[in-house]
Amino acid sequence: MCNFNNQSEDAKALIHLFMIKSAEALGGVNFLLNLIETMKTNKPNALIHKGKKIVSDEATIEWNKIVFKDKFDILEDVIRSRKSDEKEDLNILDTENTKKSKKILNMAKTLAPVEFTVTPKNTSENGGFNFKVFDKVENDFVSINPIFIAMFFCSTDFIKKAIKHTI
Image (cartoon, rainbow, N blue to C red):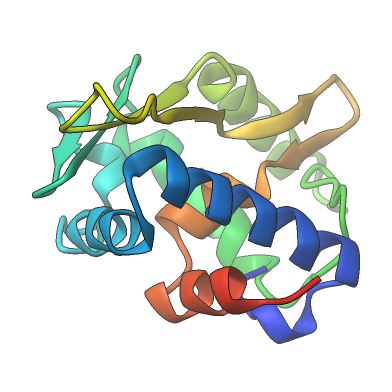
């Protein structure tokens, strides 16, 4: 998931286009990278920051719902265990353990309404952008949004590779 070189060409193109559009919406690549680096300084992860907001020098990311540590731990476990899977539309419910699958589904249903809004400090020039945690949430299929993974779990080198990628 976080190895850009192992992504399919379609996934590389999707992430590249989103990161380019995101950078443009914030006023430039450096503004986006600065926001991501600021997010990375929040330990253990910016996602469980109680203020539901991270502010960098040039941009702000906010979300509409608090993410509690127990749900974050399940999400992080799923992402870490699937880190080497590079398939698009990866079903995170694909597990032999039905108890674990039920925990994952409950976490997905809890986090599905969470929406992230990224806005630049200077809103007169650019409008910002939005994204969600999941692409699909159904009873038998849940896939994580690759943009969410890139923003919260991948390194800044991953983002830099995505931005420099040529289609």
